[in-house]
Length: 170
Image 1 (tube, helix red, strand yellow):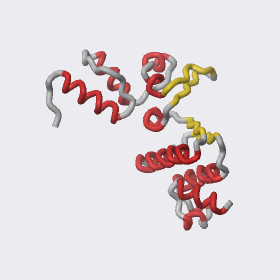
Image 2: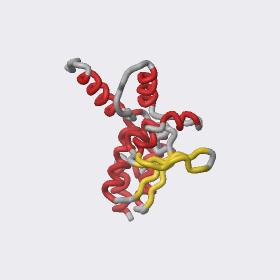
Image 3: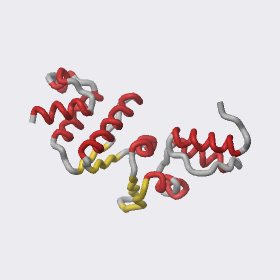
Image 4: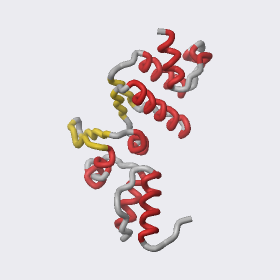
């Protein structure tokens, strides 16, 4: 058990020294990491996390999601993430299930779900901010091909747009 605990603590970025502290001495982010490590130590075949990065700064968010992704890769466990942060969902998931009023709205590859931005807005939900930006650019007459869900995909599409119109990119 101790080996699993140490392995899980390391997986979420907690040192062995942190494990000796009282929970009352830990920051909010450290408590969240400890809770996630505790669940990971049990090696579940399905890991369900509700807002795992809530309250973390941007670096902490990226780190915890990277570690969750690594856990999935290392163990082959299914990881279900409940989140209101569509940026996190776009960056770290491959499949997305959207609920509307306790019913299944859609379930598909993340990019296919976000390509239904108009429908998602109609039911009162959000898409990643960059997706909204691309939606507005299209309304203004920019003929951008493809959909952007992450900053990386937006950069690629914008560079393609510039090159297609004979512009140069530094």
